[in-house]
Image 1 (cartoon, helix red, strand yellow):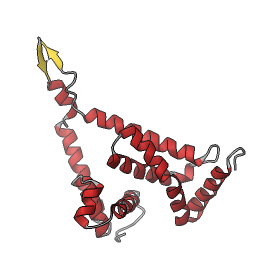
Image 2: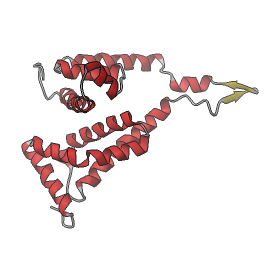
Image 3: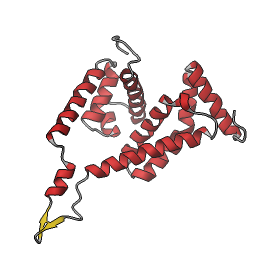
Image 4: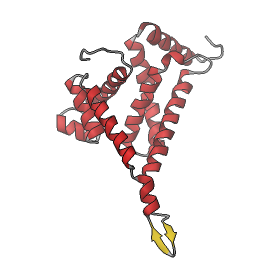
Length: 202
């Protein structure tokens, strides 16, 4: 272990080792509980939207846990985790801005306002639309390998684009349960994408 790490960082590294070497679910859970709130607050400060912050928090942990075997104790685990979360959030903001149609600075042509270029920049061309639809088909096919309760979560959140509260209301579940099941659904979907499972349902 690298010298100079704080006691907290050393504890984190021990948890990382337990998670990577023994697939210790308790270690994963402890790391999640230890940093979830801090990551969420950082995400919220960057995007100013609670639902987006929730999603980005889950994505950050999902990416970090999938890359956990690459972590080295040259610096604190928290530093590594926050860097992953920050980079992922920056990518999210950049993509979101690219999709937005700006009406504050319209283009002008021959003295007249022309929004055509702005519209073209935000709309999908036929090829992009085809790729987008194909990805949805692939995702739906992969979802068939998840348990029904997880398929429902993915469907409501990412296809119907409901908020956590709307999902909770529709399914008569606590919001905390919705978030936890969505987090698990994403983890399982990542496993399917990696081909971790064969044909049996997860």
